[in-house]
Length: 178
Image (cartoon, rainbow, N blue to C red; front, side):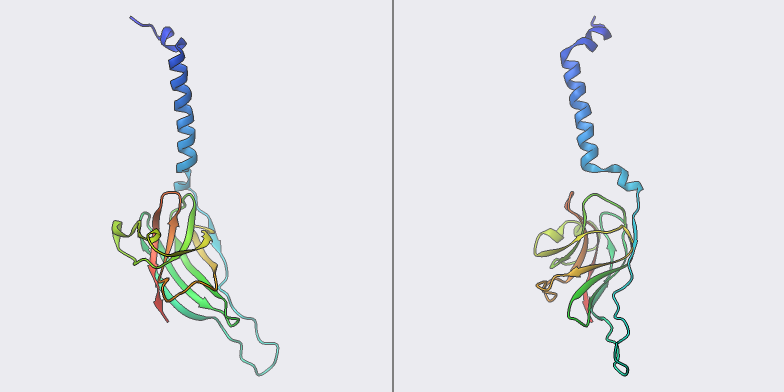
């Protein structure tokens, strides 16, 4: 019969233990499971234009080009999105009252993919054209993301909170013009 002492002294036991510890470390680094229990709230003000310098000249406010409501995919997600055009011609994607789970490597994407309900919609956003507007600033709150001038809003008709690490949508919204 093999004793515990013999097993503990075996080089195979030490090698397997080292592999197990390394595997757990790599798994924790990739999965970041603690993010299920963390929140980052960001509350940026909506873009607005200050009062005009000249009396009698009306201030131009941002114009809403498209808007939509977020639906849940991989994680429960709610809030609204709007593409705003500022008087200088620049565009901003505005997330309002976002509430989703925190996660590793989350991004805000403009895409040409359809927004599908349920599990069918989880992975469609990287299948076609998309424009990455940057890392999600916070999983809760209201925030702004500049839209590149070359982004064609006639083809990019949806927004996804995209987890680039696992290639899955946390939530998405179909953009409706006007």
